[in-house]
Length: 229
Ligand SMILES: Cc1cc2nc3c(=O)[nH]c(=O)nc-3n(C[C@H](O)[C@H](O)[C@H](O)COP(=O)(O)OP(=O)(O)OC[C@H]3O[C@@H](n4cnc5c(N)ncnc54)[C@H](O)[C@@H]3O)c2cc1C
Image: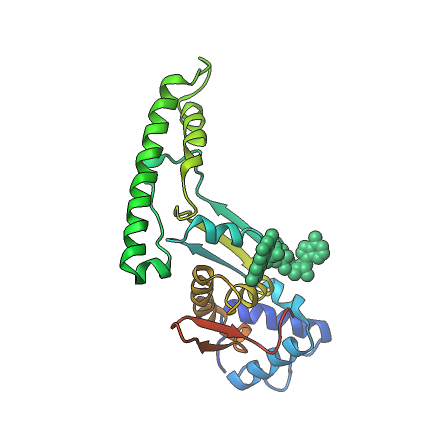
């Protein structure tokens, strides 16, 4: 008997419960059984079964433009993201787009613009500290937030914005189909290729139908016959 990941076991148990079909004569747990089982679940669009498995993923080293697209997803999902009001400019990091990494001129543009954004942030924060009227009752944290929230307006989309995302497997599938396809923006597409790799490790049977095609520029396009189950 093969042991599946807890996420896969849970979804299988939930699906079997619907029909009280637990396979009393044998465990139905070989890789072939599991593949056939979830093939049926996906092809019949019985996707609610996949809502029982929740997976949390830390997006680290991704830009605020990527996370802005990510947080448009609303169903079956939760987020915790670094606060630009609480965390000041000493922790600033920036993310270079793939197109910029490949070209010397664009790479220099990127470096110049992030140096200037960081310097601008520091200048604004210093000035805001001098001119802001702080109520005496305000704590140090409240004062810092009042400065940071005004200084951050000069930060570009390239600012790194770490975020923890917890979603159920039905939602992860929906996001993979939207964000890892060739129609998606390259940075988020690259991120979601990695999401698919991670989910293949922890819940492979729930994403086993996806096919990955290498595109001319080396990036990946992820597709399935069973979209939006
Ligand atoms: C390639 C691409 C380009 C895009 N371009 C733009 C753009 O130019 N401008 C822009 O503003 N956005 C853009 N978006 C974002 C897009 O419009 C969605 O907001 C985002 O992808 C979230 O998708 P969703 O609503 O399906 O997802 P979720 O919020 O995860 O919802 C999952 C599903 O639940 C159902 N659902 C959720 N909420 C509702 C509701 N209120 N009523 C009925 N059904 C609901 C829908 O079936 C939905 O597909 C783009 C997305 C992609 C992938």
